[in-house]
Image (cartoon, rainbow over all chains, first blue to last red; front, side, top):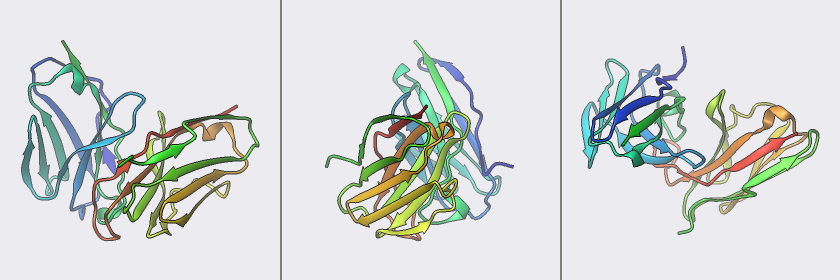
Length: 112
Length: 116
């Protein structure tokens, strides 16, 4: 089993809809999770971090964490064409510390 | 701040040649990471430095790869000899976190390496 699993997509949603991106991880001791966005040909950039169970909202983005199920998700409300990118889930490598392990990413396409 | 700086942005070389990639982290950051990204394998961590000391190099694929961080503002990733399968985008990232904490990693623009 891979350490981090993401559906590669592409996930296609119409403009204005909610995009739901999911990630499962294998390390039970992971304490923090990061979502990075990567536009085609560009470098990854952090969009959300979440450390505790439940929801964390930041503008149109909501991260949801369920440690018992080893599941983290990212919701994007009112999706815009500019949200079209690959979204990478990144829990810490081996559960804790400064090193991250990145999922393969989910490619999101928002159609006008 | 200028962000993480990487050079060169593009490198085309022939198999067997030595390749050196360079990185300048964000000033004040004490952690530096080298990643490799390919379509097949995604984004892989190669090596992690904290306060200029290599902490984890378990991701370095083989002895042909080496990395150094002689001071807080400069790091190199060297491939010698290079092979076509080394073709990838190599990212350098830096963060402010210490060994135990996880913090935002800021990525450089990457070096696209093509080995013919």
